[in-house]
Image 1 (tube, rainbow, N blue to C red):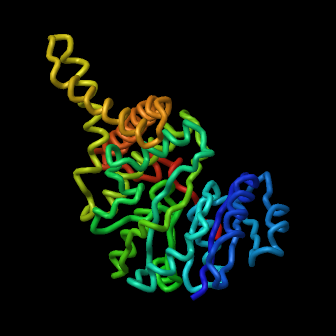
Image 2: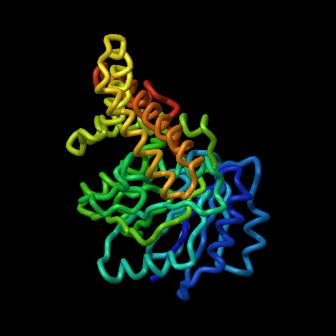
Length: 334
């Protein structure tokens, strides 16, 4: 079995350097290829790719900007392997990664998998705090951090794999972004394919992000979910409403303080205290514990508000998603 590693990139040659450096030293001894898709960048990574051409099997393609999902589809169409592994450009790959994936596929084959993410010691404190917010059992249930307590895992495209057969049957990613990952997972399920979490196949995900970008990102996540719910109502879950309920409840807790009702705010205080203590303990750093409070608050606020806006427009007012939130949709160019 030959893996084709698919990496879309947009104006990030420095990230591609780090990612390719990590792939050069992989401990996997079977042939694999790397396919770089430049998604209409104004800052090219072609020269970086040329440096690595003598070290690994690698190809480079430039195309008009059409978003990460369409660029991944383009890469899978030109790839030569039987199984595609997809990374974001801001990932660093552990030496054992490909070996772990191969072992999982040999022991219990699946046509689509996803892996968790982790933080390196070299990451900034903000990056580590955001990583905690995105992976902790206190926030996302630990799913992106490696929990296996899910029946049907929805892989995320910063670290996922899909067979050539499943890609061709599903036609790959749609034009919504974000949200293209769960959209693909659900379409695969409806076609009869299975997805699974490979908990040991983790990557170091840098998340080149600041507080402002993080808020924009999680707000888009929130907007995308009611759209997916409208497309696939049979896969809707009450847990998708939790961030919105959390934020509305927090506002309510502050409001009832005016009448001296303290119990609701005590509950929120206990929750945020737990976030601070667990984040501080996991990172062995009180500053990261404090920054994690900010990250979790922004995560719930951004997602919750985005979800509420989208729920009102798409579900209650029955607006077309492409018209209600045009910023979430790319036009295919591949």
